[in-house]
Image (tube, rainbow, N blue to C red; front, top):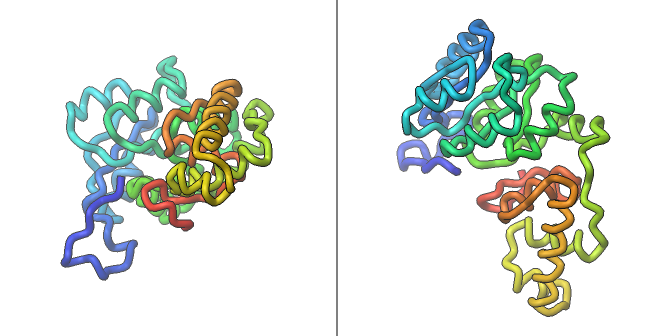
Amino acid sequence: MERPVTASNESAPAESRVQHVRVAAVDDHESVRLGLRAACLDAGYDFIEEAANVDDLVASLRGRECDVVVLDLSLGDGSTVTENVKKIQATGAGVLVHSIADRVASVREALAAGAAGVIPKSAATQAVMAAIGTVARGEVLNNLEWASAIDADADFAKAQLGRRERDVLHLYASGLPLKMVAAQLGIAASTAREYLDRIRVKYVEVGRPAPTKVDLLRRAVEDGILPGLDPDSGDER
């Protein structure tokens, strides 16, 4: 979800238009939470809540709006990655995975569950803050860590799409209406719809459902069909 820009800062650099981004953090190490709080405040973000687990965070938010939750994957409360991501998404916040580099399977699971991206704990503070800004704007964070998690994990099964299915997905996930996709490919709109239905079925079969257009964009990015895009505008970053 892209934050509205007021007239007073419309011409300012993107880096300066961050003061209304609301951030929360989930990590079972207090020192990490305190570090994220300090960095977010220094960057001009509104750091609104922190917790050692997702249930406590959701309870603490109590319906307050939050744009981004920075989530550690290795929580010691017995929760699963998928359920944590889904619970955070239910609050309306985007999920930025904050994890050490060798937890590839957990990162893959978080991305498949709908997390907007991953940033390693070894990343520079400036990179973490930039990633928060990207997620707050509703954009897919397509970085090396995302690609490495997918490439290194044999369980991340890519949907086996045919050439025409890939063409349809490329155009549709880029932002074109289905009728325009059909027109560009020289096929009937009903045929384009059949291709799209088959694409969704194939993603369900490999455990990566894509019921919405934004979900299809994520799958296209994950599978290398598209580069990182802004789901709201379809513009390449």
